[in-house]
Amino acid sequence: MRVFVVLASLLMASPLQAAERINVVASFSILADFVRAIGGGKVNLTTLVGPDSDVHVYTPAPGDAKRVAEAKLVIVNGLGLEGWLPRLVQSSGAKAQVVIASAGIAPLKLGSAADPHAWQSVPNAKIYVADITGALVAADPDDADLFRAEAKAYLEKLEALDREVRDAVAKIPPERRKVISTHDAFGYFAAEYGVQFIAPLGVSTETEPSARDIAAIIGQIKAQKIPAVFLENISDDRLIRRIAAETGAKVGGTLISDGLTGEKGLAPTYIDMVRHNIKALTSALDH
Image (cartoon, rainbow, N blue to C red):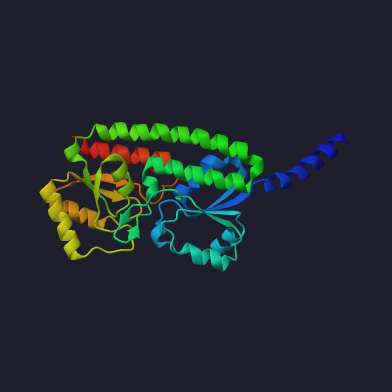
């Protein structure tokens, strides 16, 4: 009889435990990694734009509206990154709170547009974490202590990561802190850490450079003796390889920009991404 009672208790507890997990949708993989780091086992997490995919040009899948409709929180970057998302939220009939994870960050401007790639600065990543933590605490007050503890531990890792990046950049001769990347995804990294990035594409991979733009970049590489060009994990590499061939600049490797890699890739987490990028940059630039 006791065995029956215990089994019955377990069966009754299982749905309750599942109900304690809140449904959260993250627009793309970097935000999902932040949510995962803070949410622990208390979040059912869905990522719309998965690893090695381009959030700029994403087309929502048929099941995305259902996922959004079932969510309590929808975590987005904001700053114009997810142009496809407002229509998705509206069409889903979702009652979820839409959380702008970049709230509180002073955006950089490229022309009239905001640069959405704010996560490329580790101090900005700490603001993302604070915004996401606040949203999780408000959505699930019973687990507030867990969320705050996980966030505190993660923020300590980001503090160490920021010091790591600054120490690495300091070893690169100032005159060599110039690189070419595929699109303008590293403006916040440049502003924070003092490495100059030049890109043939704008802030979005949807744009196409003109022949004049490409010629100007080739001339700039030659005039300034820019030592390296970099591919990106989400972008077609043909243009960058062409620029490298015409200038003699070294292909310094692949930078992770707008999306993490899969588990077996170069950068399955945000911290892995930053470490990979700074290793690639220092390897190409410090000698």
